[in-house]
Image (cartoon, rainbow, N blue to C red):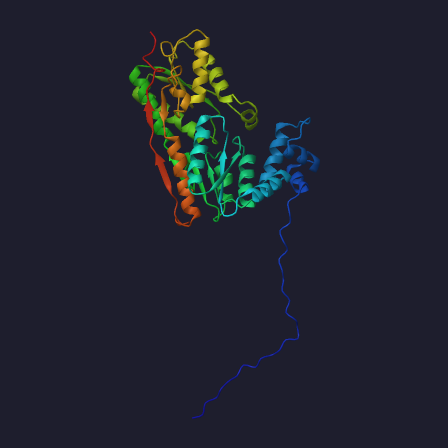
Length: 380
């Protein structure tokens, strides 16, 4: 029986093969931002450049910034900064970006220096970017890190995770120092602020206080640590003493206020403490942090009252001035230096490829209440 072999006939095509190249993505312009925000390109330019001598309504400014963020518009300042950083980075030395809301509060400058100390030991350079908790600032920091070739980012606090985290991308190692309850989908170094607030409540209850005030800068979604401290304080205090009360006094602080007023946290503490004096039942003030607490202490003393005989005061963070003899502030220690160093260690492992991109590292730091001379039993 014979075998038949079938051969596929090859037909030459007379048509020349042409390679189709995808057009490069079009650069976002001022016109695009203005069209989305409903304003002129000139208005967009003046708002994003912060030009002096002109003013716009809060609604217009918010619309322009939201449109720029949505379109991922890069300003000329962004491009200049990225070019400058690329020219500055030492050959062979990785550069990391440390993103910070401010560097006036000793909490943040302690974190920054701890990160830089650890980075220096591994021959890594570092650059600090200040955001003042604004979405625009955090987006600009992320653009800078990507455009300038940074090896990784440490956010010492992230105010807008829902906007920032999805834009990071898998190739950029990122570590965020955050509240445990934020549940971010990145590597984090955390503190359980709810439990820290709860421990302050126990301390105040054991001293015999029945009505305390919680004084704070902005209490909103962008500041989860503040809201969690309040929640832990209030729920625990009322559970220990159902007849007790926690009075909340806060003041909203915008990004512009935080940038322009170098004493904003101290001033808020001073202002809110004075508002407590009319309520004669309040015997203790719990401040969101030690800087606010220091403002409260000065307001109490300036009004002719004594700490702790007339008012007990407690803070959070255990910054260096809290230990000074003239302050002696009761506060919550949560190991700022160790948090900064650990944040860099996690980042460096990712930079070197020593940690899998499929895994998320979460490190939780403990806290410890340090009772000093600013708290005592309530006045009679």
